[in-house]
Length: 117
Length: 510
Image (cartoon, rainbow over all chains, first blue to last red; front, side, top):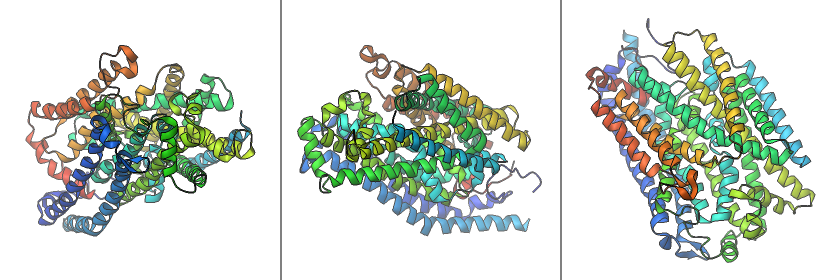
């Protein structure tokens, strides 16, 4: 590892990325990540920006009473807290159970390539 | 002067200085200084993130805004939690995998061209100073109020504290100061929540009904603070994307050993800080219920004294030991909060100056390790002194606009550049410069001609320009990339970049 730069916090994998990037395993990882992350991004953007747009342009709708003095606006705000927490837990589980093992496969493969050289 | 505040604050200060001395012995290399040796656990970094992200604007401000303006205050409080969805899904792990100490590291790794790094440095410094100055000014006012010192003396004391934390103890001391502050803040929040709810038989709905009855039927509607509907949208956009562009929060992900720990630390902060933000909404309506809207408006500009006043009331009232104790506790935590946040900001700014500007841009990385640490320490002292001077100069100036501005620039300039650097093959140095320039100039320009700065003479109607500046920043980044000469070698390297973004493995391929 003559010209390995010490900048990185993790392993140095000389040239291994060429095989790594084009491997089926890496494509599987990217697909798996996109399939879970993209829908989550859509959910929270709609959930939160929807609330912001309603607050700006439809204060009357948010003022609809739901539970005693509590109106729809505060219910949606509470919904945003719950949405964020649920997304956090779901993402943590999906990454630990699905993404991390796939990352490990790719990393092991890249390091094996390095070892062979 | 409240003796209990002084005693509690002195205790917090002594513990913090003890930690700094302990951290100093463990801070020898640049990894120690900038990233606490990359040795924090997920829980530790989660608490420290909560410490970083809950500035006095959150601790005192959200409660006050809710008490004075109803639902708009609650909208201010929920945004900072949703912001972490962006960080969790798009930024935390890629950033940890790609950078070393700063956001500039990520840009430089992707672009390998000095002008791109220079643009990133400008972004970080402008955002941090815009964030730092109001914090210094706020700290000065708070200490003046609590201890009776002069304003400039108060600011200097805060500056001195943060310089010692950062220059001597580096990221390890800064992190632990944040952790302690977060524990105290959450503890104070839990006590206030319990006492407040105990007064109404643990039925928070009573607060809402009572607040509406006392403050008027429009109190629970949006728009009491943000009159222009586009300002509500700007607030949402700024929070949702701005946090991911704030250097002093993002550099926290370099303090953990790997991307998995970075992710778990985000989960921690989302529950810790999120719970606290939710509580500020309860505190706001509870304050109206217990104290009434008139009592809160007197001598309480911006509502920043609402939480201390509520704590005093719940402790038993003005002339009781319990009331004094609660007021003292909350005030001491507020000072500790500011001190911890300015320390984090100083450290992140020093990273941009010492690591990005001096070591990587001027010296092309050719600086000895021990010299880098020395440069970092000296830089943090300089940054601290400059921040203190600016804080003194800011006396009497309306600096609230600067916090909005910092988040607006972070969302409009830093965020697009960071995300496109990580995920867009065609992105290049032209895009970094275009995005940074257009995002920054439109944010600053529109904020300066808006009502936050010019008041009733405003030329531009929005307090928060994010709704316009963010699209401009994205356009600048995209068109800057497309206009710059296409470099196929650079685009071919994107495979390597993606591989590192996803796995943390670094190639030494030329």
